[in-house]
Length: 379
Image 1 (tube, rainbow, N blue to C red):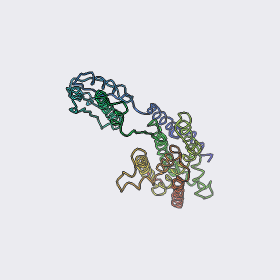
Image 2: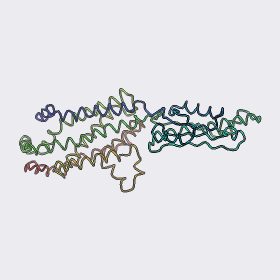
Image 3: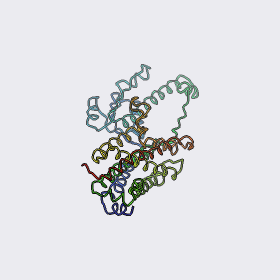
Image 4: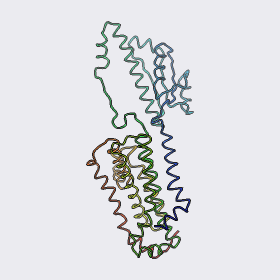
C-alpha cells in the first residue's frame, strides 16, 4: 500500500486522471448549465397582417422567458433561411387579414415551425408559441363575449371551464442541471475509475512487479488486490464526495436524503466499478483488450442508464442492460432519495444490487493469481 501511494503521488498521469479530470468535468458541466434551463432562444416572426392584434401577439411572445425575437422577416423564405443558417430555432407566422378574420369568427390559422434537430430548444419554443396562440384566441373570445353583454364570470367559465393547477414535483424550476449533473458527473468519472483500475492491474504484469506484490501479500491475492487498490479507492471516494459537496452544498441542488447518504451511495458506486474492473481483467487479462471492452461497457452503461430516456421505452433486447451497470442503481437511488425524498425502504433493493457487484472479483481471483504468478505480458 505504501508503494502504491508513492506511485500515485509520483506519476503525473494518475494525478491528472484522478484529480485533474474531475475538476475539469465538473467545471465544464456546472458552468455550462449554470442558467438551469436555456432561455432567450431566437425565433423569427413573419407578420403578414401588421395589425394591432398581430403586433400585440409578437410583443407578448417576445416577453416570454424562453423566446427572443431576433428578426421580423418579410416572408417565409427569409425566415426559413435564418433557421437554416442557425440564426434561429423556430418561425412564428401570422397570416394576412388575421385581425379581420378573427373578428369575423373565420378561424384564421397561426403557423409555427421549429427545428427539431435541436430537440430541447425546439420543445421550449413550441410550448411558448402554443401558449401565446391560445392566449390570443382567449383574449379575442373574451372581448367578443363582453361586447355581447356577458359578465366577467361568464366569460371565464366559458373560455376556461376547467382550471388547471400544475406543480412540478422535485424540480419545480425545471432546472436541467439538477437532474443531469448529479448523474452525469459521477457517471463520467466512474468511466475513468474502471479504466484506471484496469490500467493499474495490467501495469503490475507489464513491469514485472506482480510476483513481488504476491510475495509481499504472502501469496494472498485478496490481500494483494486490497492493498493495491485501496489508495485509489480512497482518492476516488474523496473526489466523488467533493463533487456532491459542490452540487448539493454550494449550488443547493435538492437532496432530501442528506449529503451523508449521497456520499455513501457514491462510495458504493466507486467500489462497484472497481470490482467490475477486476472482473473484466480476470476475464480478459490482455490489457489492451480489457481496456477496450471496459470502455464499451462503461459508455453504454452511462448512455443507457435511463436518466435522459426512460428504460421502459428501450427495445426489449436493451432493457436488461442498464441493470448490469452500477450507474443505473446510482441514478435510481438519486432520483428516489435525493429528488423525491422517498424512504430507504423503497430503495434498499438498488443498494443490494450495487453491493452484488462486490462479489464479481471472487469469481476471477484464482485466475488473476495465476496471471500474476506467470507474469506473461501480452501487449
